[in-house]
Length: 314
Image (cartoon, rainbow, N blue to C red):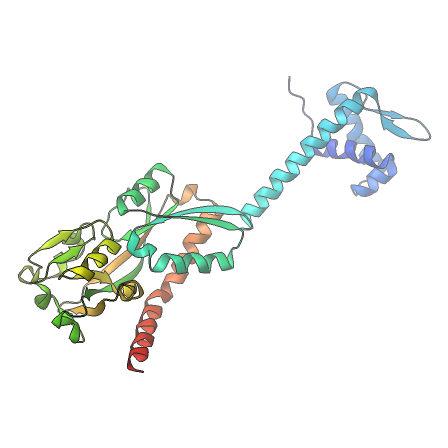
C-alpha cells in the first residue's frame, strides 16, 4: 500500500540526521523549528513508526530510522538528479538531435550548419547520417530521425513540418577539355547532346519540368551518388548538374563548373521536421537555428563564388 510521503518530509528527516539537531536542520531548510518538527511528525505518522530518538541532549535515528535513512537519501538523490537532467535539457546544456540528409547536402551545407550549431550549443549531441532521400523520409516516419533535409519536391508524410530553407541555382559540371567549359555559362540547349550523369531523384519533376522539352538531355545515365557521377565525369564525356553550393566539391574533382541558364532552374531545399508536439528542446533549437542560419546561405554562396573568381584571376 502506497504511503502519502512528501519530498519536504524526507528532506526534513535527512536534514535532522545530518545536523543531529532540530534547530540546525530548521535553519538549513529556512523553516521555523515548529514547522520542521511538524514535518517529522507527519512523516512518522505516514509510515507508522518512530524514525528518530529524541532526548534533551541529542537526536538520532531509531533502529528503523537507521535502515530507512539510506533509502530516503537515495530517493532524494535520484529526484535531484532527474530534476537537474530536466533543467539541462530545457536549457540546452544536454540533448540529442538526429539529423539526416542526402549526399549533396552532406558534402556542402550540413557540415557548416552543424559546426555553427555546435559552437553555440556545445552540450547538444548532433548525430548526422548521410543517406539517400528515401531513407531520410523513412527515418522521420519511424522516429529514428528528428530533422531531415532534401529536395523540396519530395512530399513527406503530412505529420511532418516542411520548411523551405534555400533555393540554389543549378550549375553544370563539365570536363575541363569540354568546349562548353570555355564559356561563362551553359544553356540547356547546349547541354542537350551530352549524356547527363544523374544522381538526382525525381529529376523529371523537380528539374526538367522547368525546362522546355526540346532542350531536355537526350540521354540520362542514372547513378546513386553525386560523388559517383563526378568520378565518372572525370573519365568520360558528359555532364553533371549540381546546385551552385556544390562548387567546392566539383572543383575538388578537377572539373569545370558553370552556371546553367536559359532557363535558370533553382534547386529548392527543404527541412523536414517531425511533428513539433513531440520535439525535444534540443530538436526545437536546431530547427530554429537552421531557419535563422539558412537566411545567410545564399549570400555566403555568392561570396564564395566571387572569392573563387578573384583567386582564379590572380
